[in-house]
Length: 501
Ligand code: MLC
Ligand code: AMP
Image 1 (cartoon, rainbow, N blue to C red):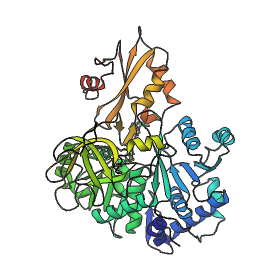
Image 2: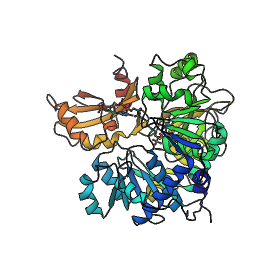
Image 3: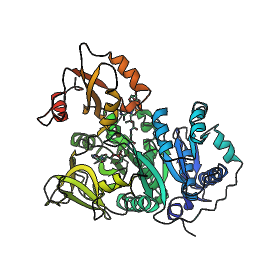
């Protein structure tokens, strides 16, 4: 009986004394102890009535228990659905309703406010992590586990991504999608059991969970598992680490810190950046300060990783490198879908074992995002140079990436447009020294316009904090082209220097 993802990532942890996780206070969890935790969590999932194919949603603080729950779900064929801790109750309700989750795990102390939702949806809510009700249930379970048989195409996880319509979609990830990508990355990035990854990313998104944790698990390596990105903790643990993965904001924040030096970072084997564009200038400054060329790669929730600068060979600033060995990547005319010649700019389309199975219960949306020959239309605009390196030059999708988190303007505009005093809104991303891009709302208002504080208060209950605008610009009218379409490009250009002061 096989369960490919469990067998490759988690089974090797069993009964081994090697260290696996190091926590901020220096406490170590061995691979064997972690596997025991995984097994107990798997039995607790069963005890809550979950069976293969059911969905377990998790909105909880990053912890070893949450990672063990991921492994437990994989072992039992239960679909793992991690959620950003920044999501509001309203956003959370959408996700658990949409996928008909059977169990929701939250932090201790968070279960009571969710009782009405649990009642309404027939959803069981338990708490995860130290002192949690789910841990109490797990503690009494055996540390032995019988993984259930799974095939390559069986679902392992569901990750929600927002969309241009404002409605989030659940990207269905199969066992093969996750395992094929992890294998490719371990190989390409040369991860081995000697590696210690400094892990400061959240584990509710592709980058921190599937790229970072799956690679470490497959390579039988170790992680320093930090609750969040904090430069003090990063500098404290850097001497023990061989590798780090981060969003560009990690690298710009570390650069801004006088502690960053060749002595502190020079021993690192590999520093990887992704999820948002790394400025060529940041790349160059890192090289000058530490002697390290950051390795930039490109991916998406729907596809896992797609391209990577090489381990050996030139890591070219401003590019995301060639496609991964098992990924087919082509550039097409965004209108017709016709493939363009090398050197032309167009839509990035991809195909490979890493590309997802479609959007949860959205067959029409899935159909429009794939070509007939199976290529997925990423919505990113790119170009391939004569060395085969891909550069991302823009986005055909109206999307802002702030500190590595995606914000779809439509979702914010739909709420802004309902507020008193706002005639209409255009939400744009403007260059920001810390976040790369920051969310800005341009409002067409009447008279003196509404109080910005009232707008902020109205958004607070409805949207995750990182989606809320960092600045507001009020105008009489939004600029439109002759077709009547709001000219966001003109707004972005006019206000490009907003955060420079
Ligand atoms: C936090 N805030 C943000 C924000 N993160 N606002 C906009 N964008 C963000 N990314 C808010 C906080 O709520 C807070 O609000 C204020 O901004 C300042 O917070 P902070 O203390 O400076 O933020 P911090 O906790 O340090 O977080 C910043 C960060 C974090 C960059 C470390 O956002 C982060 O870890 N980002 C990683 C995202 C990620 O993992 N992406 C991968 C997606 S997968 P206030 O005003 O209340 O104080 C993917 C595929 C791929 O894209 O290719 O990898
Ligand atoms: P997400 O939906 O959160 O997975 O975000 C995926 C998007 O992040 C991609 O479609 C790209 O637009 C962007 N992205 C990821 N990595 C990079 C990168 N290295 N450079 C530029 N954009 C990136």
